[in-house]
Length: 136
Ligand SMILES: [Zn+2]
Image (tube, rainbow, N blue to C red; front, side):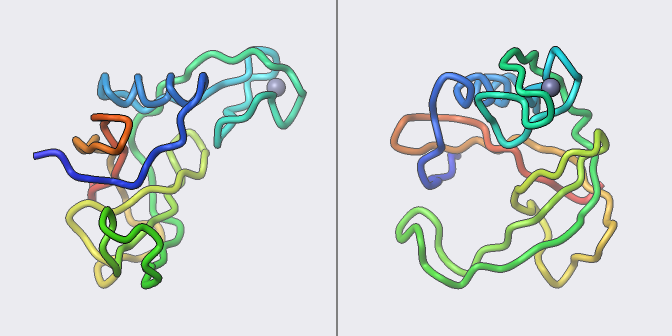
């Protein structure tokens, strides 16, 4: 069963991100000039300014850094409140905002080990797979 979600950001580089998610892979742009992982998606590397990237596959392992629970109803029908968001430090060092799967704020503690899952979702542009995290 596909879950309704607020509309994603789409565009040339974002589309590649969602395409990899659809294949079950979390990939982020990696600057081909200096090697920096650049997230969120930018037009140019924020370290060296180069505009060429390859898509580096992340392991899907990480740890919980921080979290918050939203009570403001920003998305009306597609995202009932309250809902939790988490900040995950991926094994590769990147900070990634996501949502918890199978646990809530009451279960969370800093450094908690997490593992990537891809959840079947849809928005007004169609079906996609959303990167979420479960307890490792
Ligand atoms: Zn660079």
